[in-house]
Image 1 (tube, rainbow, N blue to C red):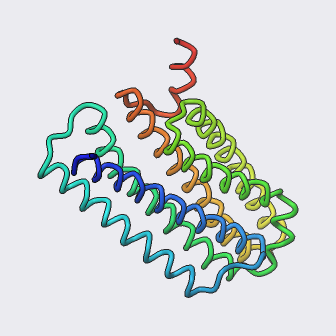
Image 2 (image 1 turned 180 degrees about the vertical axis):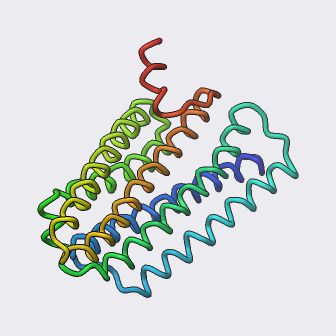
Image 3 (image 1 turned 180 degrees about the horizontal axis):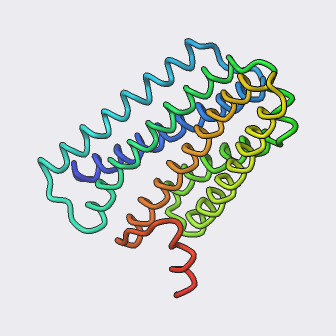
Length: 225
C-alpha cells in the first residue's frame, strides 16, 4: 500500500499534468484568435483561466504541506522544488495566452501582415513547443529538453525577424501602424510563452540530473558527454 507521502507526490504530478494541459489549450485558443479561427466563448476561456489559478494555488499548498510534514530527500526533494517553479511558469503561460486572445480581437486588418510575414507558422511553432513541454515533464526525456531548446531559439529568431519586418512596414505604410503595433505586442507574448516553456524544460533537467543548466549551455553540455 502506498504511503501518504507517495500519494501526495502522485497527486502533485497529476495536478501539474492537468494544469499543463489547460495552459496548452489556452495557447491553442490564442493561436486560433490570432489567425482568425473560431475560438471558445469568452466565458469558457475565463473559466479555464480560473481553473489554472486555483490549481497553481493547490500545487503550492501541497508542496508546503509536504515540506512541513515530511522530510523529502534527493530526487523527491528536487521534484517538489521544481514543481513549485513549473507551476508558476505554467500559470504565466496561461496569462500570456489570455492576453493574446484579448489583443488579437482588437487587431484590425491583421490578416495581410500575418500572411506577408509568415506569422502563422511562427504561432504554430509556439503551440508545438507548449505541447512538447508537457510531454517533457511526463517523460523526463533529455531528447525532448534539447528539442524544446532548439525550438525556442528558432521562435526567438523568427519573432525578432517578424518584428523587424513589421516595424519597417509601419514606417513605409502609416495605415498599418495600429495593427502592426498590436501585432508586435502579440509576437512578444508568443516569444515569452516559448521562454517559459524553456524554463520548465530547465527545471525538468534539474529533476533528472540534479544540475542547473541554462538552455544556451545545453548544447555544450551534450557535446562534452
